[in-house]
Structures are given as structure tokens and as C-alpha cells.
Length: 102
Image (tube, rainbow, N blue to C red; front, top):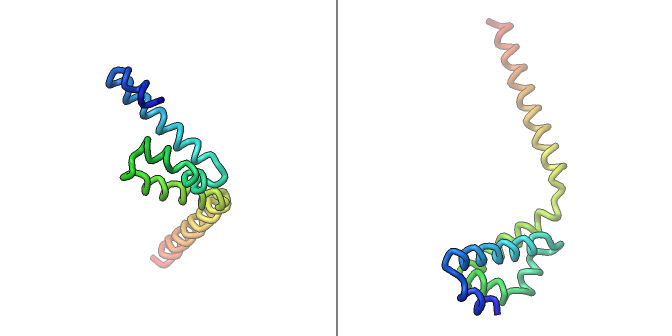
């Protein structure tokens, strides 16, 4: 039905509706607890809207999203920040040592 009604619109309107539908599908997929499962269950709709050539990209995106849901990003950020601080402290200490010896 959507694709039948879509043909009644101007070219620009068709493009806008297609983009809105794609955006809605991807946002819905990414907002689920298991984006990969959602994509698999709705493969026909995604393939019809995005085409078979882009489905593999959506599989990769859903898999990354599924994995990122399992990662504590705050912990990763704290770990990276701590490492950067540690490296900065080493550089500052090295600079001070060099200044003392010069």
C-alpha cells in the first residue's frame, strides 16, 4: 500500500517519504534490546525498503548495536580518561626531569 500511494506523490515528496521510512525503520531497530533479532524478524520489510544490496550493511549495523548494548560505555570512557591522564602525568614528569638536568 505504501509503495502504491508513494507513486501518487511528486519525485521530491517520494524521496522525503522514503528517507523518513528508512529513518524510522533504523531507529526502531536500534531502539530494541536486540537490534539483530528485530532485523531478522523484519527482513522482508527492510529488504523491500532498503534493497538487498544494503541489507548486509544493516546486519553489520544491528550487530554492532547489539554489542554496544552490552558494553558499559561509562566504564570505557573512565578507563580511557584514566589512561590518558596517566600518559599526561608521565610526559609532565619526563619534562620536569629533563628541565632539572639541563
